[in-house]
Structure formats: C-alpha cells, structure tokens
Length: 182
Image: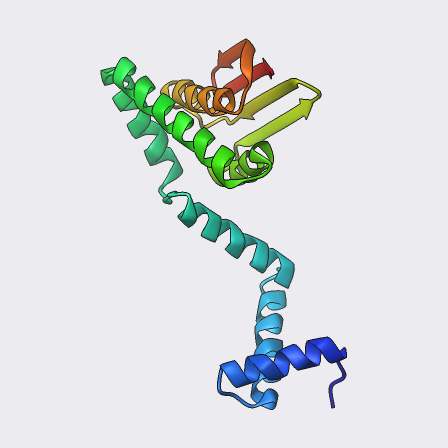
C-alpha cells in the first residue's frame, strides 16, 4: 500500500494511461528511477535541473566540446586573424543579445541563467546589477588569452544590446571584468 495526495495520485493514473501501463507498473518505474538517482548521489531536483539546462543549451544552439581543445583552437584562430574573429564574436554577442531581448521578459536574467551553460570547467562568473549599474566578471585559470579577449567582446556586445554601456573594462590572463551602466 502506498499513500499519496489525491492530485498526485490522479496524475500518476493519467501517466499510466498515457504510457499504456498499469498504475502498479508506473509507480514502481517512478520509484526505481528515484532510487537510481539517489544511488548516484544526486537528487531528482538536480537531475531535472540539469536536464533543463541541456535542453536550454540545445535550444540556443550550443554544442559540447573538450574545454582545452576549444580554448587552444580559438587562440590559434585569434592569432591568425584577430579582426575577423573579433567581428564574428561581436556578431554572435549581438545576435544573442537580440535573442534574449526578444524571447524573455527579463533578458538579463535569461543571460544570467545561460551563463551556467557558457561557463566551462572550473571557470566562474559573476553578474551583479543594482539600479543602473552592472558588473560582469569571469575567471578561469585555463582560459587562454585569445579566448578571454573574444569572450569579453561577445559579452560586451550582448550587454550593449540590452542597453548597457561600458564604463570600465579589465582583461588579464584568465580574467574579465566589465563595469557597465544604463
């Protein structure tokens, strides 16, 4: 015997019908999956959130690659043709700025959520805004000079589309800090 709230029990009955399974089979399937997740040291909430992030990444055209391979290839290309690559990253920043502005009521919040996807490996970001000011910082010990330069162009352009203007920009080895205002 298993007890559940009436609304949840009704949803399980509907799920069983959609899957052409018995309620018994459906409940056992759900419990089995929940136990598998817990045995992996995760929570169901974590699994759902991470799945949501993967779907968002796919929806916005992201692809996954080996982190160091990406950084090194970007660096090589940047060294070969700085102007062209800078323009490409600026165009992408502009496009994503327009995308967040058109698709979301709170485009800055949507960008903040996307930073979870943009941020690879051990890199860390911070996006803080108060009143009309905004600070963006991005730190990663593996980030190469070309990648950090181009990523700063991407973010600066994206935020400019959202109405922010650069007040101060600092780029060092593995560090970006942008201070902007509306």
